Amino acid sequence: MTAPHQTLPLNPSTTQDSIPCWSILGAGSLGSLWAGYLSLSGYAVQLLVRRLALSDQTRSITPYQGERLSYPAQVSDIQSCADRSIQQLIVATKAPDALPALNAIRPKLADQATIVLLQNGMGAQQTIAAQFEQYAVLAACITDGAYLENSQHVIHAGKGLTRIGGLNQKGQAVEQQIAEQLQKTALQVELSQPIEQVLWNKLAINIAINGLTAVHQCLNGALAEPDKNQQVLQLCLETEKVMRALGLTVPEQGLFALANQVIAGTAANRSSMLQDTQKGQPTEIEFINGYLLRQAQHLGIDVPYNAALTAEVLQRFHQAR
Image (tube, rainbow, N blue to C red; front, side):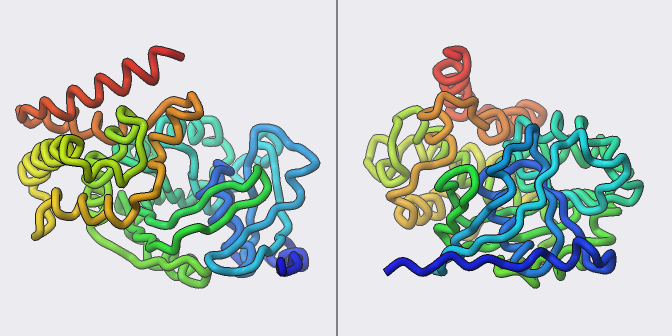
């Protein structure tokens, strides 16, 4: 028997300035997941969308292994936000869209605003930290699984861990405070420094898996097949070279062993890049294998497998649009 929907009362923080307010830019699966959990924990939440619709006023979340809960969605279009009104902003767009979206909303940021970035891959976070250095900029590395049942309802499908840390000095100054706010939600959050190492650890696994699933149009588990697994190995070896050259720590068991653990543990998963190609959407390849390629070129390291994979994904799934 399906549990009845529960509806929360209007968030009290809409009238109490002492309760922190979070604005969320990007209402995809992760943005909606964080909006739901923050709202359920008593925070004021403002979802920023391009266009308002009547259906936006009712949103809901199914927590991990829980029952469906409704929460009031305080939805605003970007233009209606008052200038300098946003104090705490979560950017939950895809990596290619993060900088343009932030530039569009820049006049709305308060002078002492905090920006938390949820992007996959790397490159977007570092660019934003450099171009928005007057603000506190933090990055989050997320392993939760979530998907949208429809535009108003998000399902928390896999319980993961969020590691968060400041990308610049102002971000590091407030990272403890931000982590403590997030730890009051049902999300599992921990403070991690240096956050660059954490981001690279996740990037390395994405490098080994995402692009190959797009090219082969396969679930993660298919990468355990001998021919595909050999490609995983070569990508991992190249990534290790670049990580060591950058002074980063490589997992003790090696990236290949770690990647195979992830492949086995997520065998039935469709990677985000596979989903993008199946929907005819641009991929994040330039922020995953492409980011490694740019770092390798700067270091003078040859990474032919990553170069070939990046070029193939770009040619097959971007130029066709």
